[in-house]
Length: 581
Ligand code: GLY
Image 1 (cartoon, protein in one colour):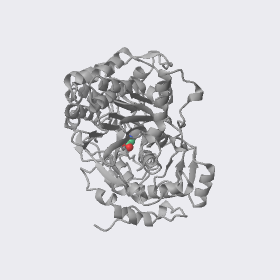
Image 2 (cartoon, helix red, strand yellow):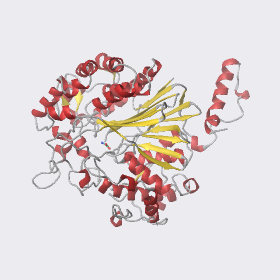
Image 3 (tube, helix red, strand yellow):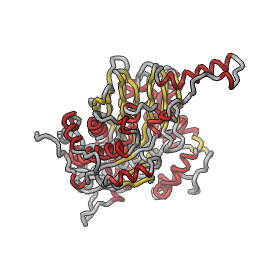
Image 4 (cartoon, helix red, strand yellow):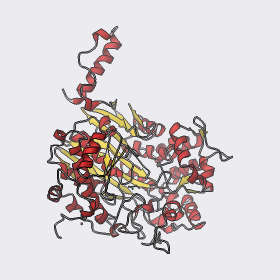
């Protein structure tokens, strides 16, 4: 019996039995429902179609689109537009992202890069003050913080190329939600409260996200967004032109000109979503398909998996000190490389092939001492290369034919720059903060990045977003991804390892406690759930460990086993949703 049967056949048998007979406890099926501690969280099961995402209303819209005959891309695009209404901290029209699609017909994968682009007038040192220091307010919370948004171009490119429904059909549910309003959930009220101070500083955000008298919406209040409904209706009628050349473009540029913003009509008209070959790697019998540059995600996930492939990870024990030591040391080596070699592939030749090369990983693996932490100060980027390259959100969609979409998109920080474009109902991203404002120096998150990711007009900032699909024995098996800035890579990595190396089900693999190490600062972040005894052992090996601070990432995953869709939303943040039928 395989794992799915072990988990669900007893339940199905039980349900059928209770439906047809007067079942009592004494006649229960012999096998217990949960037979392995690795299966301590259970996924939601559906047969035909599924959307797993950060919020219920948008997820249900995607699921309904499939029930009405739409395909997974139709569902993903409808969910993306709906999240712009229901999940304003990261769902967006004013941001950007990456969409990875597996098409069962033709057995091929498509990657759409709709990352934001620096305006033409952007320059290397634009965020440095006269004292040479980074001006963080300008970099993250001003009109200059915004790259040219890519979301509308990306979602519409996906729909027009791989979807089957009309723009009007796909946008109608999002327009209705914006127009009729949504009930304020606990999560939304909490998010607006947390970011309230910053949102209130922008008069347009204050008008959009708070009541007319400036007071906050209460849980259960109806929140209407008529300006956003009008923006969505324009996109529905006129397509990407409305956003990049028409009324919405004019409003964005007017907002830019009212302050220090750089985005021009030409920047908007020049924006293109780009299809790129996805990043591919192998781990044992699994094929990993993930995000290529300008994301660093796929490269470093595959690089770390390569380093770990030959170790008996299961034998070490999940989240044992020996395993976490090996994981942290591999993360350090990969993030050191990230600091130097990653950026926009259209501006610099990146050594991607070398970084994901198995021999390179084997040489890096030899640098890891099994008993002792190597100080980050002694690790140099690329030291084994042979001489010769924040708040985000993710959702996954799948159907019974094995089609899958893994989509991560973002405004960068929660609610982006917190600045809204007057009259559009739309927040602007602060993705310019993902460039290296001072190459070689740590940014707000302690992350060090090199010249390859310095600012230049027309360039895409380096990302960590890692929408990923894993194939097992050639069949689509797992779609996953996460928010979390630089922690996205290590979040997705551990979710994959939990499923591939530790045989955990899709729910447990996403929920289990995680660690993160990004080379600099030289410390392991460990979620509570990692045992203090394990932490002590890691400290004895020379690691500095920060235990139990903030949670790391939030996955939204779908696994396909024996024709069943198994969905799991990571409970680290409230009110994620699995919608399936
Ligand atoms: N803004 C988060 C990322 O792109 O990695």
